Picture 1 (cartoon, rainbow, N blue to C red):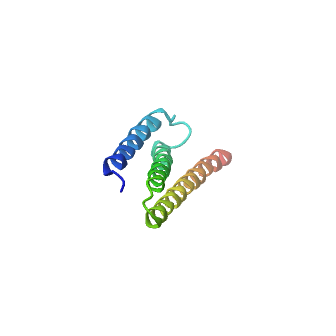
Picture 2: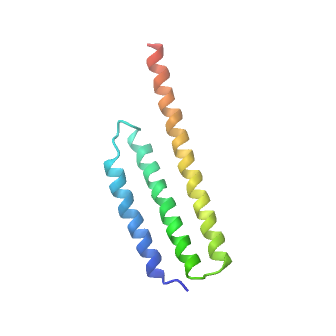
Length: 100
């Protein structure tokens, strides 16, 4: 069985990494909200990969691997959706500049 403190450690490390990533993303690239959410979503994937890897290496069984795979897939969908929304928003601003 996996030590729950390892998973808590992965969560804390992902949170700290997310904070530093958000702090260094220039707001000129995206709106501050979207850049922050995209960075956090990327860290979520890293956390899901780490937790799933630990569960698989510890021999937790098929259920842990399936749950980990679902977590990775959902985090990837979240990242892709965040970038799609950001791209659409930036495209709206480009159209406003062309009209002027």
